[in-house]
Length: 182
Image (tube, rainbow, N blue to C red; front, side):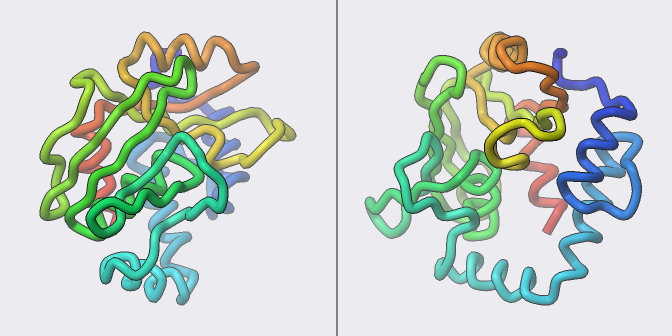
């Protein structure tokens, strides 16, 4: 998989995992359905307002993970996945986030300023919106939402997983799509 195939099996998985009203046929429809599902939950808006006010972080983990966001001047808060840190950073407006490649552990950093991507390293960073097969161990969402230093690392990780499906974006495109989501 090179990250762009969006077939019926992936659509079915995403519908099941995210409780969508119907099976998405493509990435754009997936994001529309996901936004509509989020809007059904009145507390979502309240929580996102708390994130915007720097009073909350999406997906906080009590344990050290590969994904983190800096709160204040230096306090690292760990999250369950790369999506959690990136979405928090965009909503907050100004943040530094980091991740480690799930394939090799290579460090990546992203700087968001005024809600837009200011800088990132390394320059080939990609985001995978993955989906494991039904019944796969772990968290059906966060265990499949990762940053990778480049597509080579992403493809190696995908190949190491049984029946992993998903789609990917370059970091700039993914940040643009997240900004459109909320």
